[in-house]
Length: 163
Ligand SMILES: [Zn+2]
Image (tube, rainbow, N blue to C red; front, side, top):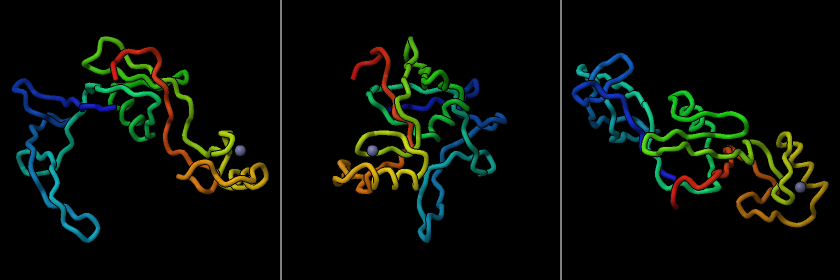
């Protein structure tokens, strides 16, 4: 999956922030841990770093199943290019005629790697694996035998996009 964010522009085609200030891309030095790092930022005429306004997305290369992080879903719904409801996450892409509807098949949480059952919390997950399963974890990424999934696992309904 690939998303290209579309930003709010003024009549001259310049990027603007929520207050209408014209923004210019510049490279600034920012501290990352103990290192100084060159990063691209949008600044106003006074050189103050501002946030451009996302007004939508173009969508490329749908894949299924697809993992969406809670922060992507929160941003998407807040920015207005996607909706969450009825067990689906729906992306309204500017470059597509019809919305992409993803069925949510798993929400963030704890899941047994052996039998896929959803578990309330880490302690419950640990107890479940010890009590119910004797074999090593079938999931090499989760040797404890359970997964703490921090994403929404979704399946694309229909076939709106190639790839
Ligand atoms: Zn299990």
